[in-house]
Length: 98
Image (cartoon, rainbow, N blue to C red; front, side, top):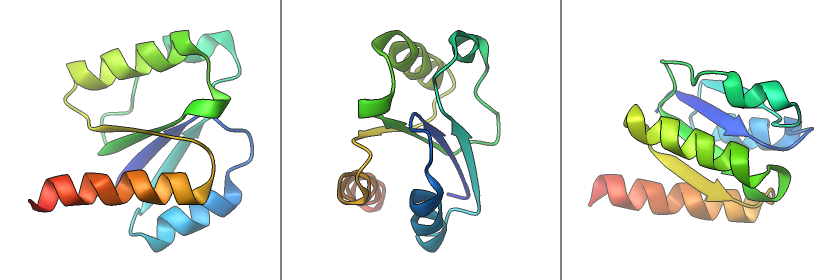
């Protein structure tokens, strides 16, 4: 996958660098702080969505989840720690390779 949408979190610079190291060429970030975020569409080029669960409200999370399902985009949920993110990405890779 080349493109990743990260939803949640304010400063994800360190996470972005680690995600680039895992092969993601483009990382789009929505912090999820503003109400207008729920009106934004998911970019069509996104291959995977990562929701940082400890930095997003339930309404926005549910809206992103619904739009991802409508567009057949895989979605991962993780806390903001790299360990949790890496674990979810590894689970996703296992599903794709098995």
